[in-house]
Amino acid sequence: MEEVVTLVEMETGAKGEIVRIDGGEGVVRRLWVLGVVPGKRVEKLSNIIGKGPVVIRLGQQEIALGRGIAQRVFVRVER
Image (cartoon, rainbow, N blue to C red; front, side, top):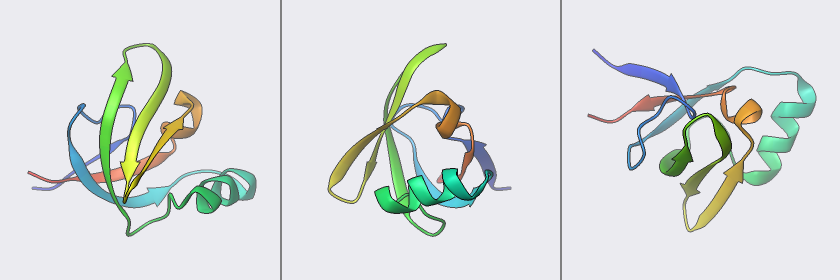
């Protein structure tokens, strides 16, 4: 069974595919500009539990997302 979690819930070092973004037009547009869109593969690089940004790798770039935005990005985690 596949597991779909938010970027916040994802384990550090885990990889997966972005499947959904829950948010209004502004959130979706902001993420689109960064290349964070459904269908893209992502790796979670770091996370400080309870605070601070979530850092991900998307292709060759590393992106830090605030926790509020990261909670809106859903990823199908690879097993």
